[in-house]
Image (cartoon, rainbow, N blue to C red; front, side, top):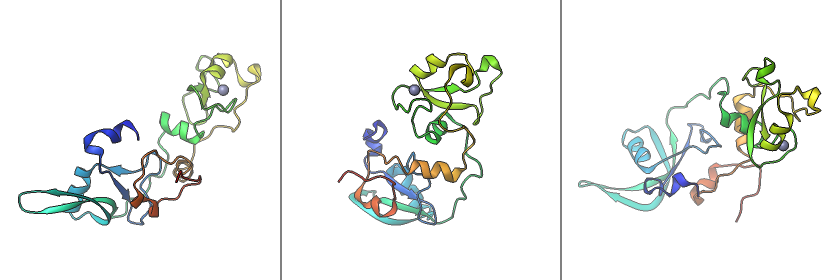
Length: 187
Ligand SMILES: [Zn+2]
């Protein structure tokens, strides 16, 4: 479990699907805490597809906490992927683009900033700290270190597909019918 899910509010998270029954996001997986989910149910903004056994009571009624909900109104995915540190890591599969390591990941400017390189999709890659240090302020050809894939801006769909390679630690069994990952899940 991630730390966020250990907080009491996160004990009954609801998987949130778009109106097409696809998760809003695979990684991080789109989940709401139970308060958000219950509020959306009362506002009639979601269909409840599955519920936990847990029941909460108010003075006037009882409700089973939803475990899977789907939005009634479709939210169109963004047209462009947000340029964030997380999304750069996701694009690069959380692997160093020089040696393939998954440890001690940092960001490397392919063309160093000191040499005029910009902080953009096509000039920033995931790199382990050892490779980052080794490359230093050199150009790829000077260092003999070229990214495995030429960095470029991914489409939102490509990021979505990458996210499917990273199942989260916490999964309620009721979620599995709605999720498709590219790797085998632990039984
Ligand atoms: Zn490396």
